[in-house]
Length: 313
Image 1 (cartoon, rainbow, N blue to C red):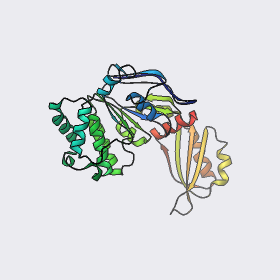
Image 2 (cartoon, one colour):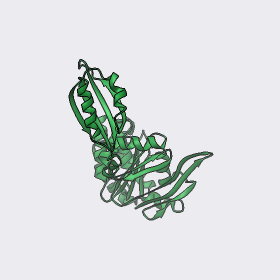
Image 3 (cartoon, rainbow, N blue to C red):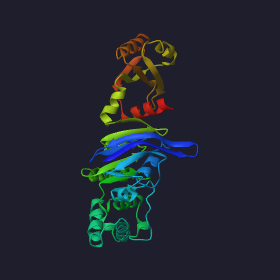
């Protein structure tokens, strides 16, 4: 459904993206994840036909973005980071206007608008002037304009930016409900949004793709690493040089626990060898420290993201 091969974009001597390639099958939600300034929005604008690439090729629904831009635009719905809404129009009039400029036949416009209103759960806002809507509802209108012509591909650029926690949850549910027959690219720098919503994740950093896989398989990048949190009673700073001598300790950090007298939290990252955790516990006990709790942490998508983007810097 979406094929991207070797996309690059230069602004003078600055290269915004370099040799970007990925593939998204029909019915998949792809999370396009990266830090601010990594090249996410540039890639989304190229795919939506609003920005020409310097090099490379992108095909959407069988149409090549550069040579067949009008056909591509008929087959995609695009929600930019700042939706281009007309604040003085009612929601319904705005969607009818969008349906017209997107080529929906006149007889089909009312039904397509009604379908978009229902899908985005804004039927009761149809006659409300857009400027009177909350940020969350304006975002729903933005999504409605992206789907009013019933495109097979939807591109959403930072769809939950500026929303409160409840609005974020509602928009995530809406995005999931749009999947199935549609293919969706969700561009974001918010990790929970991607992990809770997407089937596939592509991570971009400094304009280059550093990983593409399912969230589950991306976690396997950290299988060889062990992370422990140890809550203990007593002073530990004088033992840090001895901890450094234990094999496989990659890093450690000590933080006092608030409202807990003389308790501290020791966080340790080990590489490859879980057995070193026994040596750590033995050292702490032998030095008279009381271990209140010691637990191994499961890796998260955030851990993968930080590792991949930090290593590239």
